[in-house]
Image (cartoon, rainbow, N blue to C red; front, side):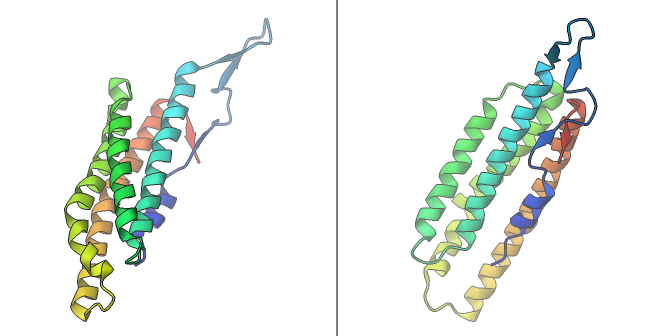
Length: 175
């Protein structure tokens, strides 16, 4: 099954960089000393951490959806553990009020993964393990995959928009 999350992952921006101006550092004409903007550096770190969690999770989800009967249980446990771990980690971040939406959208995405893994995906595991899938089971798997991808896409687009707002507010450029 082809995973839409790989495509959406490409839509998200993986790292932050300097915007090309002296926004990353102010050069003092008197001392020629570089003064770093700590808030901006923190924002870059937060963005990169959040994207790292997202990328790691989508990798596990992709691996799970591509699982064969021998690896599906382990891949399922890994993805479920990671979703719960990420939620706890993201919730521990202390952000400014105006940046909370970025945090919330990633939590919503991780909670979607957790919920789907605990509910919807458990129903398709027996079909994945089946060596002789019926045409109906194949259609059911494809239907579930498409439904999952549609819900995921919606949440990823919301997350990407929140990331862009976060970057703009914190004067960082995404690439």
